[in-house]
Length: 122
Image (tube, rainbow, N blue to C red):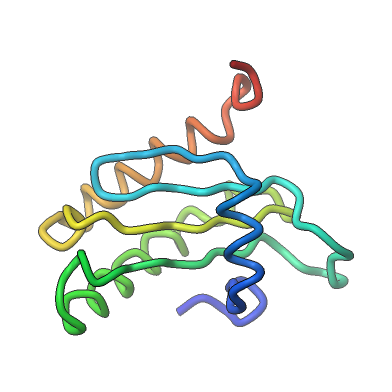
């Protein structure tokens, strides 16, 4: 489980990241990345992550399983995200059948794209 200070919890936090952040799509997930969170950051705060797993992914049991697996994958890669950043991981329906290795590969490639040297260039 992610520590409380590493989680997005409130709707405005999710909304800010999804509307203002960069978006990268992968086969099992969409990553929304906001490099600088709005407002003052608490002392010692690190990167935060939030998860969106909608009903299109499956019933409540499937959604809970996907959320747990995504949380475990993000926990292993959160050290790559800058301390002032927020990340929202939105699961696609394909995430329900994907292996943990596939979820990790999609997350790593999405983070590579978002954090890479050309992330701001278009």
